[in-house]
Length: 462
Image 1 (spheres, rainbow, N blue to C red):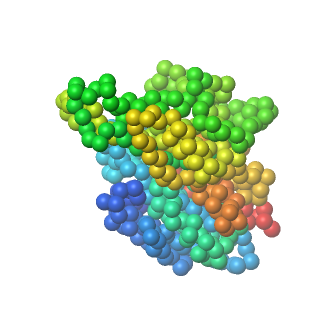
Image 2 (spheres, rainbow, N blue to C red):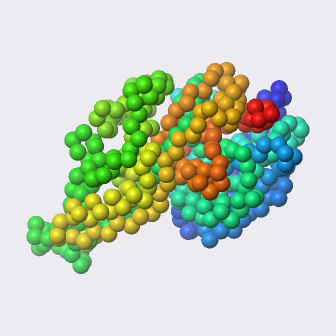
Image 3 (cartoon, rainbow, N blue to C red):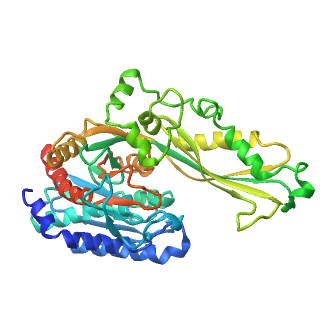
């Protein structure tokens, strides 16, 4: 392993060029107009695996976007690590807020990335992070340093709910047999403060439609006499939080796993500067459920947020219309022991119950996933912690992630595998937002660290 830094230094430009080529492919899974680009990205990933030394590389068709699989089995008696990632990306909208084109990667320096960061959609989520594994694998193969078996499964539908991954895993249980799953689709506390996520929130995602009159109406003729769907929708959404920002859906908190005082104190030991947080976001103050810190609000508490809302006339100039319909997309982040289907049902029942007689309401579930907590006493966690300590020079801090990776719970249910969440990005890297970026240092540090994980995982399993 002593040569990994030298290998990175000697191949630095190539490692960047290859990632840039992948980032230029607009593999937006949510928009059917980009289906060809998603397929192109899958082929790129497959070829990268082959070039790195993987065997049995296959672009596996699904009813949606393909899953790319490759492996290297050096000895069936040795432990096997399954690497998961995704090559699809979020839509780049709103395009006008990007300072550079989202699919033309460029390196720019930032306050948190003084050595430079790669600005492009998918750079941190998750192309840059899964590609680290491909390049770390390449190093281990070329230097005869792969100490155990590896399997790689990179999908193209994570950003739209991984709807075909479960069936793929069920149909390929033998092919996917492993001892642990390693996922780099999470963040660290800071570049000088490594951390490992030990839990993730679940997700319930719905779209709501409120319908009033059977057509758009003149707001002067009908305004004040007919319910305006946008007004009604806004009131309904506003009513779903009380004055303490507590969610008002009956039964919503019934199964929430509450942390005791000691557990909350441990969670809040993670470095966090509230002033830097507000400065980065350019906000005067934080917002959230009363009685909880920012780290608690984003890690151990459930939420309900509107992700998009529309209706009526939004073009240039004025049009005095009372719209027939209004829409919103709403996500709820869930914590252990909440169940996504149950929360979706509770939301639907409540949302329909608060609708006034002047409108009709439809709730359409999109996708969901279960919250998870991963063990910190496992061999895999110990190997990850030791690897990070080796390359960063300090022990990583266990943290709770605020995002959702629904397939983590699925891997445990269908494959019987626990996961290690070893991400190298930062929360401030603008994931899902305009100007997404990923630090060059983070990219190379991931490539440097991953071989150590394999080394220590193999050693600790002896």
